[in-house]
Image: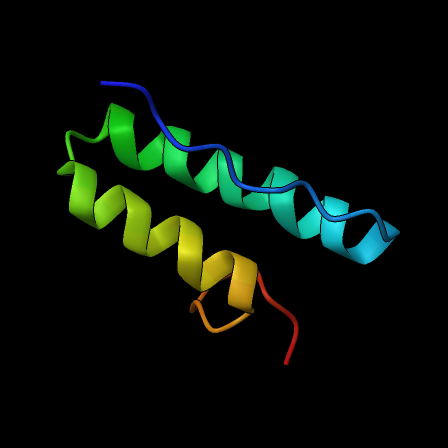
Length: 57
């Protein structure tokens, strides 16, 4: 099964969000999360709707 490629945003903020989403997905994979959970985490980070303990309010 090939993994679909997410288009990398061209703006700086989008690229930072993409890299953050990849890091979050990698951590979720290390924690043994399911593929569905990993994809949901990636999507939330890309949309900016995730809840990160390090995010500034």
